[in-house]
Length: 99
Image (cartoon, rainbow, N blue to C red; front, side):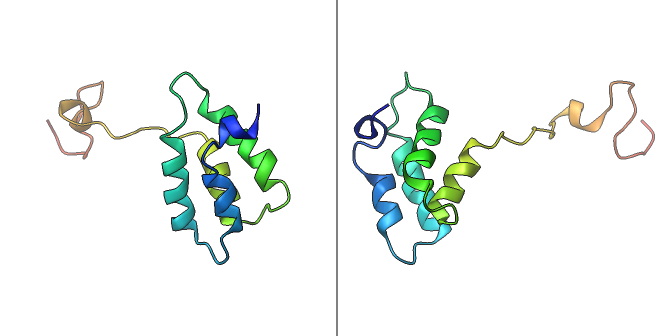
């Protein structure tokens, strides 16, 4: 991979150059960068490349933390709505009251 293909506008590069940048600012920059990743590309590979290219020397930088968080697996969805959220598979109410 080439850095020109992964970060064509230099958004990630510039985020590392901004002094006193905060994590919320890094998240905004990351989302601006992420929507420009081509649909055919693997975003995880692009993110890993950015970490190795920009974040290797700055592991405590807020952008490195944001990029690493983007690679973390998403939390398991546990909320269920409708009847499935109120009643178990055995037919019992999830709140403990009788049916």
